[in-house]
Amino acid sequence: MSFTLPPLPYAHNALEPHIDQMTMEIHHGKHHQAYVDNLNKALAGTDHENKSIDELMATMSTLPMAVRNNGGGHFNHSLFWQLLSPNGGGQPTGKIADAIEKELGGLDKFKADFANAGMTRFGSGWAWLCVKADHSLCVCSSPNQDNPTMDLSECKGTPILCVDVWEHAYYLHYQNRRADYLAAFWNVVNWAEVLKRYEDAIGK
Ligand code: MN
Image 1 (cartoon, protein in one colour):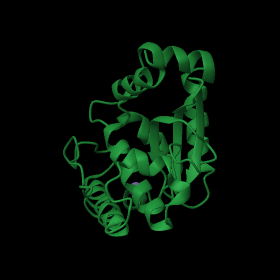
Image 2 (cartoon, rainbow, N blue to C red):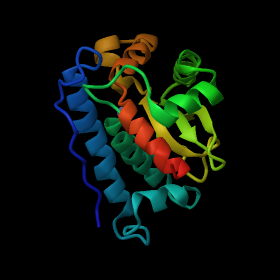
Image 3 (cartoon, helix red, strand yellow):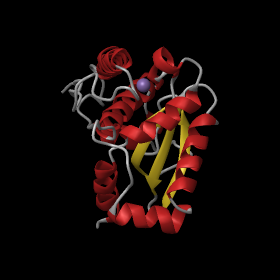
């Protein structure tokens, strides 16, 4: 079995002006494709080549660095595309809105904490909103292509929202202005998908 690049669920220009077409073309078609290709190369002929992406994440501490970097890259980007939408933005609804209010001090406080997680991640990485094993929410960040489903991750949980803070995610349009990219990100967040993933994680 080998992994394949999932199609973007919208056109490359659909997230403009917040995320530009060329960034999406290169990010999805070149960067994500390279993670998929290099993951397949790293797994070919090994005992791990028939494992699912979730199994790979859960046993990452036993796997080579090439699987960690490229498997993480494939997992993270596959999730990220789903969490963006040209019809996104606005406010969360339902149980995730209630949980953000109750557990994270409200939407504005959560947005500030999430952006701060992205801003303070030195170098390349991701910011996350996760559901922990006890069903509580947490905001954290990870380096490189690590994620909270990896057994070796400092921050562990089921990710329900993420943002890519690698320079390749924003540099063409925002150059060094990571804060502007993170502010624009809220205009394309797919809150319906965040809600669905939250309900799945807590078992409704
Ligand atoms: Mn990326």
